[in-house]
Image (cartoon, rainbow, N blue to C red; front, side, top):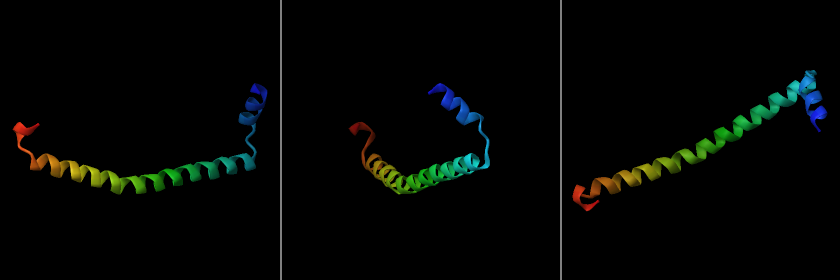
Length: 61
């Protein structure tokens, strides 16, 4: 297994480079999509927490 991995990293053919570029672009795209989905939910949670904290007096905690 180790010789196969070493051979893989030693190869710098064009096809391998293109594969890595496509794979990296896919990962970045998935991360961006995940961030976009989580951003609104996180903002809503922060707003809800802020509203709750504002509605309470300091002695109620």
